[in-house]
Length: 268
Image (cartoon, rainbow, N blue to C red):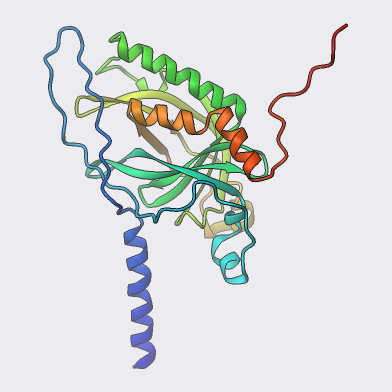
């Protein structure tokens, strides 16, 4: 009987931890109002805003060694990232768009940079190399221009692919500290209207899961389809956080060797 009660108590505690992952302090990222030249202004206030509950931490997280218990539960990802700032993103849930906290990160092994956040029932890290960070910035500028010049199409087909492909690494798992599944592939940059407001989107179909070779049927061969939504202010903030200047500064603060560009030989 005591064993039964102890087991039930553990299950209740574990369930409480999981259900709290998607709930957070309230955030207020207003949706973008988009009025075409022949349209009437309509206010949109129906987007739900909830984020995951994170305590405030230092802006720059130093690399640390894990103890044996932490290593068992995290599959090693605590040593993969510099976590250096916070922003927010939107994801689409059954009840509509929800705002989630997102942590900006830099990888130790290849210096890719991006963000991590919950999306539906899992936690994902999207990480871009230098070339694809430049592609993201270029695509964002194209979106800003289309927005300002009223070129966005409310009922356009495949608008999520408007700005073309972008390549990135995807890591995912049940918790932010346990994301052993990983793959590198192509996603798309585009936009989508939700309840009258446009959002810049980053999305991908299934990524091949490299972790499947190790874990087998304990995991899946491919990732789920993932999609993130950004207002203009969110997108600008993300681009600022993962800008080359900010990344270089963060890397210097963490004592990593980093050469942003090859040094050209002197021409005489």
